[in-house]
Length: 372
Image (cartoon, rainbow, N blue to C red):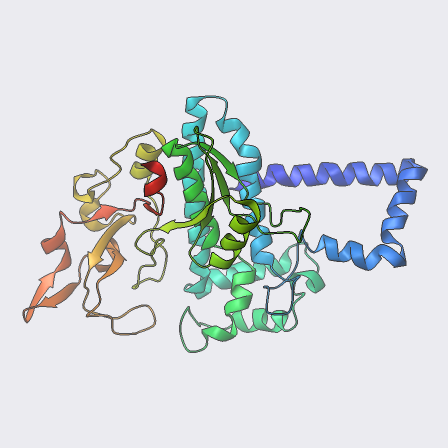
């Protein structure tokens, strides 16, 4: 992701250079800049600027603090607003674009590791505190700086007894690591399935019309028979989708990734990622995306970090909670040398399930009716 963000940084630097130059050399341009900074408009100008960066996480009754949403929008702008132009130029470009999406999805899922890896979290917070963002903006939300300083010494992890105190702050420094990957995967799948014209509205927070502004769905799907559908990612926005449908007469439905994806391995607490073999097959247009890990050159006797085991494991999760009786998704290499109990016998996971390990494949709930 680094090169993409660096190029975006160059665009911002270029615009800042132009703005500085014209303020210095054009009296009328400087006059307009003064109007924007004048007392009667300054507070408005500052509030609008918070739509581009604001410290903290949105809370009830406070509309301006939602940094995780802004950071996610920036990443989605890079992919759906600019990089997609590259994808449109050829079939090979589209293949590489789909690869890019899944590699960035993996990076976003890895960012969430700071919720369970305190060493990584401390590095992240230290580096943020060293960067060029002023403290009054980085820690705009009250008490966030104190929470950051506490976390530099804390070993708390997701879902333990102390986590709730830090949850909103941790969310605020990451680019919506749950929602953004899902939206990007759905975007890729809509493109791959070729079921119509896809219009991403991920960056459009409100649509203006003759009444109150309304929130659009994440995508519009335009079918060849002129049918139009709104597609919302996630099942928790029924009210928003209903309002959009009532106001526009466009039927809107929700989709989501099956099996509660993306899955967090209970042993290490980190998300299961998409492997290179899957990304290659997916981007190359294969319909059969299933990958049996034991047949893969990278399996390495269960040491592949992308391989998945679904089943029981006799032991504890990353917070020390006994999960022996639960069937869950695990990294194969986290449990391959472990066992579970069946009929009072210890069953070695690697020996018993060598042919059952598989690579993660995204499946979208809710698209069947449109595809058919």
